[in-house]
Length: 254
Ligand code: ADP
Image (cartoon, rainbow, N blue to C red; front, side):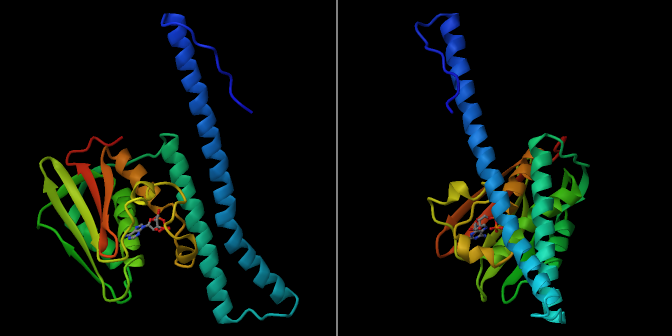
């Protein structure tokens, strides 16, 4: 099913219109491809936890399995994972529609970084904050916590025991910069441009069990952009990665 294309001859206005039209239908087709791939990814992500939950409940109903505490815990974990995926998808959909409502206010950055770090349980990984005493940014505190939280959760997730994760807050000119650096597995140069894509993972099999959905970084990027900022990744494979969130200090967030 190929989109309409007009034959373009010459350089006059009509020809330019034709060229623009062709570009538009090509990009519409690409969008449609992306949308189809996305729906298939979503179905794939939801299928595994759902079929686990259903399978165990059916086995219990049939008397093959018993709903002991351990099983209830693991089913609850699957349900929570499903909830995260659905919440993440909703955030992305809102951001796509330009309907992500931010509630900007002055945010005490060192305090927020401390909150994010306190919410983590890094098994065997040293996790610390380095920030000046006074650092403020105008941002939506809930969304900023979510963005930094995703970066720190990843750093902890992809850093083996004995490793180090440092969260740094600082200023660069008028920007407030939040850096999350880890000594983990790192990311191959060829993979770096993809890490912010939806559902992209370096290693699908490995990360599936570790609770990620492949949506975390896509959300971080949307949240950064909604604040008028950026997020970038740098990595030395085998040595670690650094993610940098940059926000204009007096961000006139939407
Ligand atoms: P996931 O839920 O899989 O963590 P993300 O969107 O947060 O999804 O990250 C996408 C992928 O980027 C991860 O699956 C992983 O391969 C890679 N990645 C993200 N953060 C790091 C990191 N700190 N170190 C190494 N790889 C990372």
